[in-house]
Amino acid sequence: MAYYLASDIHLRMDRPERARRFARWVRQLEDDASLLVAGDLCDFWMVARQREKELMDSEGLGALADFRARGGSLAILPGNHDLWICPFYERTLGATLLREPYDTTVHGFRLHVVHGHLLGARRNWKGWMESREFKHAFELLPRPVAGLLDQLLERKNSSSLEADERRYLAVFRDYAVGLRGRADIVVIGHVHRAVDDSASDPRMIVLGGWQKRSSYLKIDSTGASFHVVADEHQENRSPAVVSRESSPSPPSRSTS
Image (tube, one colour):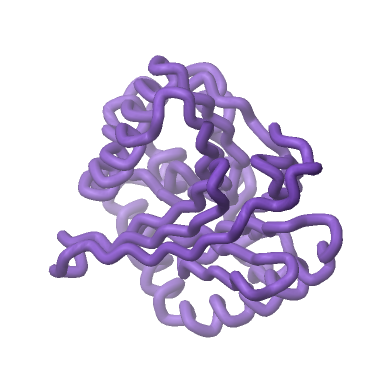
């Protein structure tokens, strides 16, 4: 049985191409596979502005519901964007909700999974934006005003992207080193750059976002492989796959 991990898909109704790409990937998963989404399956815009009955119009969420109906297992560890939609995940998708840090052993690999936003690198003002009060205020804004605020925040995030990524990755690497001897693979989300420190101990994988590419970790009886697939529509080139593999851990370790 294969075990998959992905994060930061950021589904939203005004990004249908992202939902289609995610849906195509989910439909390719084996019927008995397990999928863990390590935060931010849905974007804050979708969480705050769409009614629950509208959410299943997303092709990505529909594919997850079909995956569960086929017999697949779905677990979600909430991120900073989708914290307030957890009851919907449980009720409509049949997802198991996880609390971070989440530790498990899969095919001999000891995994430690966090979304990453709580590890100490975020700006204080972003913490306020994750509050229930901000969500309710954003819900009440007229759509043009909410759209303008969304664009302003996106531009602000883009302008400081490289510095923010460096700051987060430094914190993530220190965090992973602190787990040496207790985890074989430390899996983190939140940062949208896909990173595989395959030579480090423990191995650190930042799953990466789905804005311009698809990335996921697959673990099965043959090992652990990290895949990054470029989006041919946004990048205007044929998909390229980067896969880094680890051999399974000694067979004495348990499998779950």
